[in-house]
Length: 75
Image 1 (tube, helix red, strand yellow):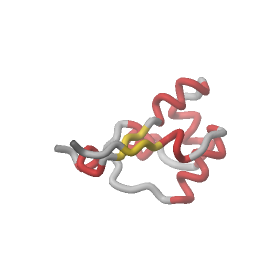
Image 2 (cartoon, rainbow, N blue to C red; image 1 turned 135 degrees about the vertical axis):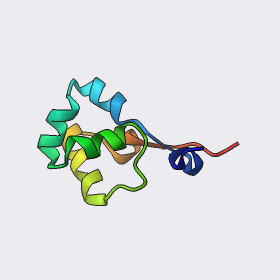
Image 3 (spheres, one colour; image 1 turned 60 degrees about the vertical axis):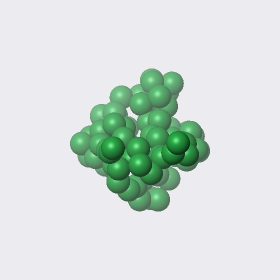
Image 4 (cartoon, rainbow, N blue to C red; image 1 turned 180 degrees about the horizontal axis):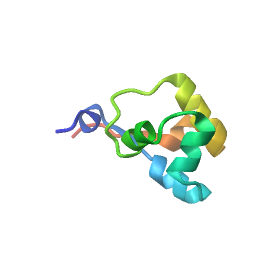
């Protein structure tokens, strides 16, 4: 089981990007993070995220952290 599934955290970055009509490349430029790092986050492979990065994502996507991250209890 991948670590992100074990933790129960789900990343909804792809959904928010689609709703805003913004590409991953455009968001990476706006936030100052590499496309590779955002891709790792988007695909649920990130093990951590800095609060400063989360804040920058929320600022650029006009959303709240809860729009980007979900928690589901393990069964």
